[in-house]
Structures are given as structure tokens and as C-alpha cells.
Length: 147
Image 1 (cartoon, rainbow, N blue to C red):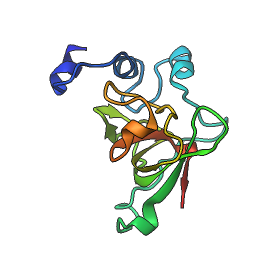
Image 2: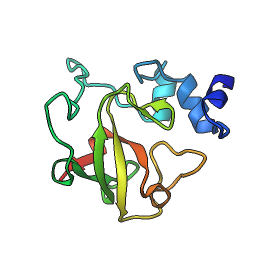
Image 3: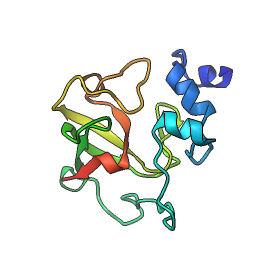
Image 4: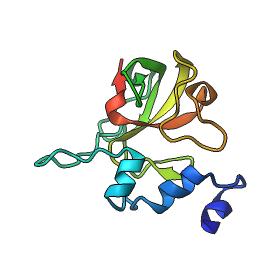
């Protein structure tokens, strides 16, 4: 915990501390109970985790046309809660000093559609999608739809 406080001038939230202490370096939960709390969905039997290529690995140029996405409500019915821009699917990529882990994406939030929707990984500075406008957040990969 002290290491986390030294990395940032802001105090560490309980959520950040839980995620840091209950996930492995590759982003997977340390046990089944942590997976349930975090909302981690393991790959189906016979499937394996295959990282989504990053733009640099497939020689894409970042433009609004090729990385625009919609963020679906991770908690409920699948409605669009925001429009944004995909930034990375690399599980080792960090958002707010934490690895996003497998089955997650790093995205910019540009336009809010459902302001009171809760963030998948809240921070001490933001807990709803309206507070994340103009920021990078982590979002479940299965709830990001490329436009």
C-alpha cells in the first residue's frame, strides 16, 4: 500500500488497493473469490486468452475513424453509456497506475450518453461516466463496440 502511495501524490482508494492486492501481474485475479468481486470472466474451457493486437502491432494509424467506439453498460442491459476512442488492449497497459489485465480495454471517454452509469473501475476522483469525460479509463472488452 505504501508503494502505491509513493507512486502518486493522491491517496490510494480502497478499490485501487483491492485491485492491486488481488490481481496477478498479468491482470488475472489471485483466486476465485477475487475474480467474483472484480467481475473477471475467465476464457471458456478450451479457449485461451489471445491479446487483441495494438495499433502499432498491425500498423494502424490512430485516427478518429479507426478507433471510435461505444461503451456499453457493464452492469446492466447493454445500453450505450458513452462514446469514446479505443487506446489499447494490452493487458500490461496501465490506467490510473493499475494494469488493465486480460479482457479489458483502455479507452478515452468523449461523449456521455448515460451520465449516472458507474465506472467499471472507479477511482478517488471519479465513479460515474460523466466524471470521466476527457479521461482514459479501463472498460471490459466485451462491453466495447468498435464503430
